[in-house]
Length: 70
Image 1 (cartoon, rainbow, N blue to C red):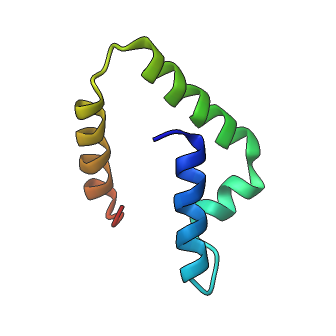
Image 2: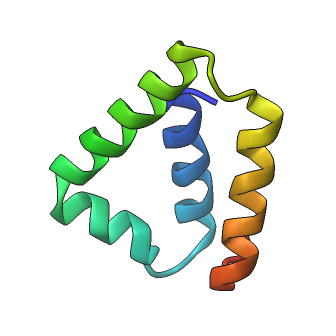
Image 3: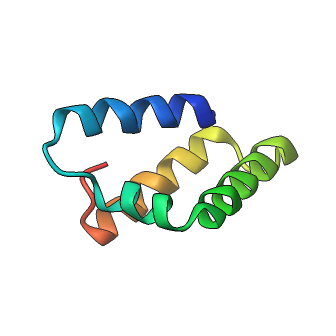
């Protein structure tokens, strides 16, 4: 999922919630973090060294470890 897709997903969730998400607050306060994460994701995707399936599995495992529902 590209940057536009992620932004759309965040906007859909924020419309449903009455208060902003913590991640959205962090990215709003630290735009350099957003740019850095996006640059890393783009470079990793462009390099082709990690299959998308493995990357998705790592996201699920990481979110399970930290207790995130996403």
